[in-house]
Image (cartoon, rainbow over all chains, first blue to last red; front, side):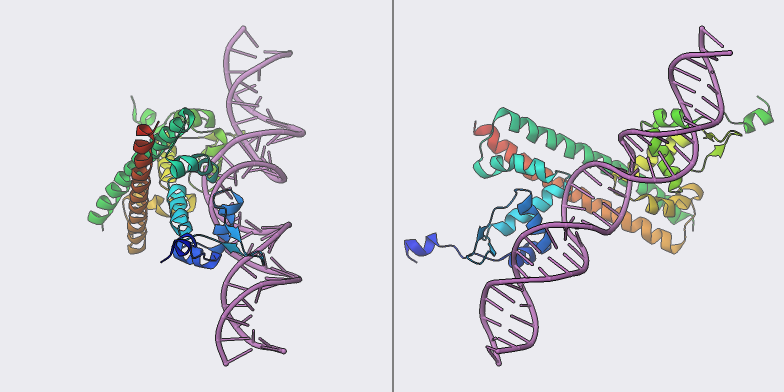
Length: 125
Length: 125
DNA sequence: CTAGAACCTGACGTTGACGTCAGAGGCAAG
DNA sequence: CTTGCCTCTGACGTCAACGTCAGGTTCTAG
C-alpha cells in the first residue's frame, strides 16, 4: 500500500450511505441541505461521500432522537470535529445535556405511571 | 356537609384549568377536540370542568412528553378510568411501555456521547 | 352601566424531518 | 443499444400539537 493509495479513499454514493446508516436517500440529501454533510461531486454531479459519512449519519440520528435540531447540530459540529470549543459552544453543550437529562427523567416518570396502570389492569382481568 | 353538597362539585372554567395545569387555553380546547376531555357547558356555552380536569391535563402532558399521540391516549383512557382492559388494550399498553423504554435507552446513549464530547472539550481549552 | 377581562367559534399558520411525485439524466450488464 | 437501476433537481405534501388572529359574546368589578 503506497502513500498515494492511502490518500485515495474509496468514495461511496448516496444509496450506500443511506443503506449503511439505515435511513432514506431523501434523508441524506436533507442533511446536506441543512449543512450537516458536504459531499464531493462526480463530474456528472453525483454525490460522493467518504466512508465515515455513514457513522456521521448514525450520529445525526442519535442526536435527532435526543431532540436536537439540525440547526443545533451544525452549530456543535465543529466541537465534534475539532475537539475545540469556545465558551458559547460549551454553554450550548451543557444546555443540551441538561435538556436531554430532563427529558429522560420525564420519560422515566411516564414509564412509571404506565407500569402502574399495567400492574393494576393485569390483576383486574 | 350534606349529601347534596357532596354531589355538587365546584366547577371551574377553562382559564383556571389551563393555569392550574400550566398549559394554554388553546391546548385545553384542543384536548376536547381530540376527545380527551368532555366538559359540561354553561347555559351560555362556556366550558365547565371538574376539579380533576387539571390532573388529567397534567397526565396528558406527561403522556405527550413520552411520545404518545392524543389518539393513542383516547384509546387507552378507558383503562386509566375504569381500571379494566381487554387483550388488545393490554397489548397496546405493553407496546407503548416498550417504545418508551427504547426511547429512554436512546436518550441515555445520546447523553453518554454528549458527555464524552464535553469531557474532551473541557480538557482541550 | 360600563370597561375590561375572560370566553366563544372558526380558520389559517407554524415547525422539523422528512415522504412523495415528476421529469430528466447517468451507469453497468448483456 | 437497450434495459433497468441509481441518481439528479425542484417542489409540494404530511403529521401533531398547538399558536395566532378575527370577530363576536359573556362575565365581573366598580
